[in-house]
Length: 192
Ligand code: ITT
Image 1: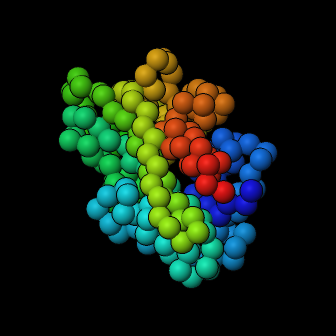
Image 2: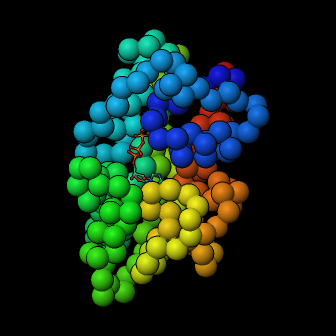
C-alpha cells in the first residue's frame, strides 16, 4: 500500500517506515515534488496535523497523513506542547529547546512528562485523527546520541534510559508515534 506522509522531518519518516515495515511504501514530500515548508500556526496538535495533511491534499490531490507531536510537561501545565518545535525561539535547534526546558525545570522535583503524537489522515477525501501517548519523566541532563528532538532527556515509563540512549527498535515499539501509527494501520486494514 502506498502512503504519502506530509512531513519534512526525515527522522519521523525513518521511524514511521520502520514501524510500518515492508507491507507499505511510504512516499515523502520530496517523492511527490513538494518542496515547501508547510505552515503549522494553529494552537493544537490536532489542528496542525490536519493543516499539514490538508495542505498536501488540496495542492497535490493526494490522500495522505501528517504527524504533529508535542512534549507535554506536567509541572509546566503541558508546555512546550504544540510549541515544542520552536520552544527556544525561531532559528533555534533541538539542543536549544532541550536546554531551555531543563533550565525552566531547574529545582523542580516533578519531572513527569509525556509525548503525544496526533496523526491526521485524509482517506478518500475524509479526515480522521489518531493519537498516541507515551508517559515518562525528564532527566536533568541530555543522555544518548540516538533519536531526535527531545529524546535525550525523556525516559519512558518502565525503562531507565532515555529514548536517546535506547535502541531505535525499542523506541519504535513503545513510542507515541508507534501507538498512533498502530491505530492508523488498524483503520487502513479495515477500510481499504
Ligand atoms: P513536520 O511538521 O514537518 O512533520 P517537525 O519537526 O516540525 O516536522 P513537529 O511540528 O511535530 O515536527 O515538531 C515537534 C517537535 O517535537 C520538534 O521539535 C521535534 O524535534 C520534537 N519531536 C517530535 N517527535 C519527537 C520524538 O519522537 N522524540 C523527540 N522529539 C520529538
